[in-house]
Length: 433
Image (cartoon, rainbow, N blue to C red; front, side, top):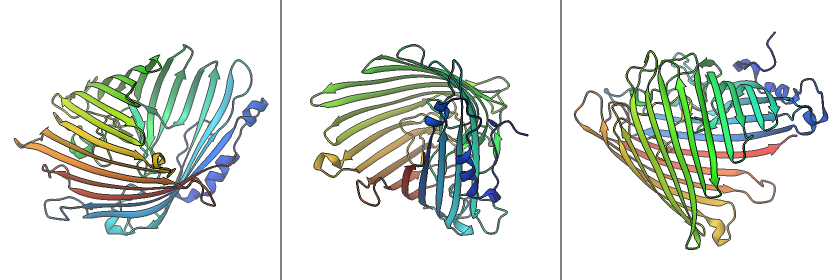
């Protein structure tokens, strides 16, 4: 019999009823705090995804000319309280289910649903995944083991489609020292956003920068975030994917009132190198990523700069988002020797009395890319727009509607494809406990 904290790989046949079982699980109760402090939330998420490859389906291209699907997802997040005493024990549960609304075999594989080339029907009709997490608390220190959604600089779980990626392992967080947050973790498995299978942790292979299916036994990381004062925070994090790569991160977050508004700066430095047996080959990357933003009233103006130095692109885990300011809707602008800049504008319509409505637009341009097997300089650009509205009252209060559009173009088409993309997301979060 599995211990209660073991990650559970869900099968398609489980259906949505598995979420209900998860919600009912509380385990042995030793103190009222375990029950009284328990929370359970469900997010309903409906997603329409359309990615049109502007090069079409030609003889020198791989894959379909379009990815277009819509799906309905449900995400249950149950978090228990802790038992009383010096050691407080608890258990968390994550339950996820996705259902196909519209799809066809020739336009599947959008990342919303499990899809296999061997399935003549294209994407699966439904899928579920479950994860349980045991936790123990001592003072301001918490140790968790099981299913995790890490959100730290060197591992940010991907939540860009219907259901998020789940990682499995142990994570320690501590706030024993005032203004200092410490974390350490060892992870060994992950379940991709559009999958039910727990897989070995591995290196991401976007645009064939690295060979695919390079797995490792574990991924280790630790880090410190220190709040120097109310306007300045310093960060240091380290991570290593066993026998593949190691990575150092230095960050600085600053804010300063200026002329009736606030000036913010976000500086990120990452240094990556191959590790141990170097199973992905030589890795040499130094990434500078910085963003400067000024907010005044409903307006926010931002400018970003990103530079890749070294012989390779920046490595990161499959199923995660790279911690770069120019990681945007389609692209990450992290190719070997790439330099890129970003201009962004945000507006909150609350400034003119329309609560809940926000807008953003940005443009990112990258060049100086080292293209494998070519002397040609690689170039690419992306333009994004997003309109979001959260209903403020009435029957549909707190329902969120989000329209995202992106245009991406590149000149090194043997590794990347031109894209026009539209995403429509309707979501609603509600508490059941």
